[in-house]
Structure formats: C-alpha cells, structure tokens
Image 1 (cartoon, rainbow, N blue to C red):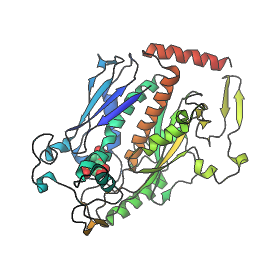
Image 2 (image 1 turned 30 degrees about the vertical axis):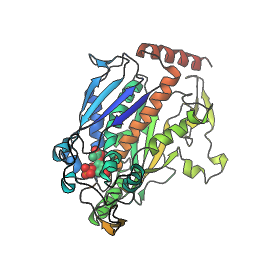
Image 3 (image 1 turned 135 degrees about the vertical axis):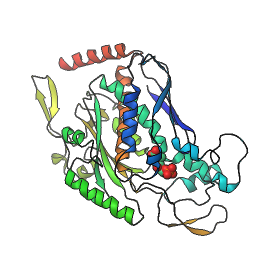
Image 4 (image 1 turned 180 degrees about the vertical axis):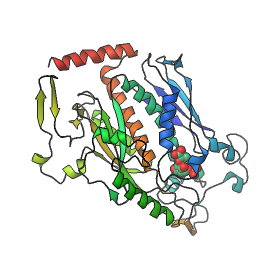
Length: 389
Ligand code: EPS
C-alpha cells in the first residue's frame, strides 16, 4: 500500500523523499516531523557533522492547508554541509582536479566503498559512499514521522531504547516496560536503565579516547497495535520478516531479533510461549508475557510489537585499518578524521521510523482507503468484529 523512495548524497545539496499511498485527509504538522529529525541528530557519541546540520523538512507536494491530499507526498531536507562541498559535489560542469573533487581511492573496511566501486566500475569511491552514508536516514525519519502521524489517529504509538553499547548490555531476556522506555527520552543515550547508561557512556568515552568506534543494540516497540496485521498467507507478507528487513536496512545494523528471539532459541518451548488469557470485561484475549514480541504466525497478536537491532561499530574510524588503494593497488592504513564514536541513540530513532513505516503499511493493507475517514470506518468495523468474536 505504502511505497517510498529517497534520493540524495550525504554532502550533496539535499535529501528528498516521495511517499506514495498515504490516504487523504490526514493532518500533518511539519513541527512534528522536525521534532523527529531533531531526535535523530542527538545522542551521546555523535561527531562533528551534527554540529553543522540542523535538519528541517519542507513539504513540497501532496499536502494542502496542512492536510494530505491522497496524492504522493514529496519532501526535502537540505544539507547545510553542502556549502563546504559545492566544488567536490557539483551537480553540473566538468569534474575539477582530483584534490578539489575529494576523490576517494582508499576504501574503508566495513563501508560500502570497495564493494560499490567494483560494482559500478568506478575508481572514485565517493560515487558510492555519498549515497551509502547514513545521512540518508534523515529522509526515512521524515517519512516515518508521516506514518507515525497516521498511526496516532488509531492510538498506535512507537518508541525505542538503547539496550547495549559495546560490552555494557542489559540482560538479554529483560523486557523494559513501555513507561520506562518512554521516560528515558531525554537521557543521553535513551537507555531505560540509568546505571547501565552510565556504563554505556564510559564505553563510548573509552572507545573515543582510543580513536575507535563502538557498536550496540536497541529495541523498538509499538503499542496499541490491533491483532491481525501482516499475514500467515505468504512468506513476503509475514510481519516478522518485514520488521527484520526494515531494521536490517538501516546502515550498520547486522542483526535483528523479534521478541526475545535469541534467548528463546536456547530455552524450552514450555518456558517460551506466551500463554493465552481472556478478559471478559474488555472482551479481549491477552498475554501475561510477550516473548513473541507481539508477532505470531507472521501476524500481530495484539500485544506490543518488540524487536531489537544489533549495530556494528561504525566503519569510519579515526584509527587506521589495513586497506588497498583502488588505483595503485598499494597497501595503506586508512585513517579518517571526522566521525561519530557511535550513533546508537540515532539508530533507535531510525528504527522507530522503519517500524512506523512497516506498521502503517500493514495497517493500510488491512484497513486501507483513499481518505482517513474511510480507513477509520474500516477500522471501527474491525474493532466491532473483534468485540463480538
Ligand atoms: C557518515 C559519516 C558522518 C556522519 C554521517 C554518516 O558524516 P561526515 O562524513 O559528513 O562526517 O555524520 O551521518 C550524518 C551526516 C547524519 O545526518 O546522520 C557515514 O559515513 O555514514
């Protein structure tokens, strides 16, 4: 139902996105989108670039008088750093000398540089890294904010929290409550456990001091999600797969888990599966545990969606790693000046956006209509069906 594309290079003029499939009649506030963009820029361990940028969205199409038209929504986020890159990233004109063009012939291990250079037959890895950069995720967060706005109309909320940085990790099977997750919003790493957060900050300080980077993990959560989103019908409709794909599409994410999936794999079934209860007052089925992360058989089961992403240490390092020059084929030690020590807090915000996009898509697949009113009518009918089940 929902499709979106982004375009833009990290040091080019701007990032843009087109979101297609959003119903008409949805009130959109740029201030809300900007607030999400601001959240993505924060977090302990970020580097120099975030001091330059101050992301703000401009809606270009699909919105009239603050309300969606049901036509594609187009948006733009300008790159402030562009003013320092006008020659190197000029859109038109002949290429300037190599030094001015800031050509990159030294691929960084862990980055897209080498694989992309080989793929597109370019000896200037800048043609790859500009697009592979996690800068692109600002556009996703803007798209995610629009999806969150839709979901909010149906009481669906999304949050995230950092669960580990390097070796500072919450116990694998601990599930923080929704209240604790949302209460940590203003903390430096958006970690629900203040003591653990201090350990995380020490990990970041130690890595930074040694000119190194550090990875981690975060959990995303969605509450107020009705049962029955996604489908058991086909592999590509199963929601767990869609959530995992969305998380794994975030730069640096190398692992994904639904519920307490990893711990579950080591336990017995009798201690894993969430027993089913019924509340006659609410006329609803419910669980006392949520190890399934709110998804069973590829569908939401009415509990909170919980999924975790595992993030590798950033591959742009101030210290050196062995690599080989693309042109001379000579060995060298790659060292780059400006980078983040970790972007784990930002990664959680991007994870929220990706989850919002997946849930909004699944929601519209089930209840979709051309106007918000039509979606609401369809949803109300389904809630009635659930109550009289
Ligand atoms: C990134 C490298 C850094 C990060 C950037 C992602 O940028 P620069 O090369 O300009 O110093 O700051 O992240 C962002 C710009 C952002 O908005 O998140 C990379 O190589 O992926």
